[in-house]
Amino acid sequence: MRFYIITMVAALLTGSLQAQDSTDLWSKAKANPNLGRQKYIELKLHTGSHLYNGDEMSKILEHGYESVEVRMGWMSTGKQEWQRALNCPSYGIGFYTGSIGDATVLGNPSGVYGFFYAPFARRKRHHFEAGLSLGLTYDLKGYNKDTNPLNDAISSKVDVYFNVNVSGIWRLSELFDLVYGLDLTHFSNGRTHTPNLGLNMPGVHAGLRVHYNTIRNIVQQQIDPTFVARIRPTYIDSPLSKVKHKQDWSIYGAFGVVQPDSRYGVDAFYGTASAVLDWSYLYSHVCSFGAGVDGFYDGSLGLVYAEKYGKVSTFDKMLLGAHIGHTLHLQRFDIVTQAGTYLWRRDSEKGDWFLRVALRYNVSRYGFLQIGLKTQNGAAADWIEWGGGGKL
Image (cartoon, rainbow, N blue to C red; front, side):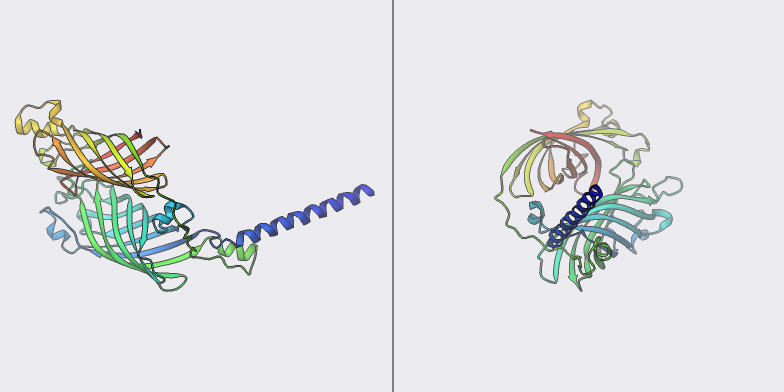
């Protein structure tokens, strides 16, 4: 009998302690103004025109485009220093679908992508955001010399989706925001198939953003019916630490695959390669500027020069360049933008200058993976670079 009484008392004491621990934990948890995960769903309508430098589709594209986007975003609070340095950005995933012209020639494209918004000029009920999106678009109808000869802009069913925008965000209530702004959307396959003039679509957009917190209903139904979790973050405005300026040297190597211009009538694929030695200087918590030298190899130049000059060497397919650049650091991810010119080449076939836009993932402190687009003379895609490198 005594054994049973002791056992019962021990059980009651244990339950009391557990209840006390749970109560203390909940008291501490609900003191956090950003309890849960503040998110939003954004619906945007787009309309605009085409920047097209070809001839075949001028009439097809003259009526512009319309599209719809749905985005789900995660809001940062400023808990980490890089978030405060960028004024508490948001990021997420999105889905795109639209009509970009005659569907019998261009198809009915849809796409999926990741996006990043950096706020600026923040006020109590209004602010602006600079946005960048990168992903894939599909269900395109590509060029075919027999069945679709007019489409000289795209030649593959799947292309890279790229979008930049500037938006105004007007807070209507605790739940809703009105979104409006300007944007530019680009489709390109990076010359993996030709012809590939690409599609550049400047336009305007407007939409609605709905905020929510994933734990709000769960807490009220299962833990504390009197507690209402915030659906918008309370931003942490702790001062930034002193910038630790530093210099880095990096070596980057990449490969790619291209098709020559369709006027040569060759469906073969050729290899490309890039080798880059880069110096960078961290001048703020999240930004670096730098410069470097580039070595390029484009196997498709052999076909070009064979027709132009009759005789081709391996060195004719190589180019030497130099660039200046800027990098935005977002935890393990870097957004790299560079502009360069050629120091040595056989002739001006590749133009006089190039751009590189790339996304880098830092696997470790000393190594990274990178995918980027190299262009020629500005917006014309040259090839997609798949590669990686290391920091010295």
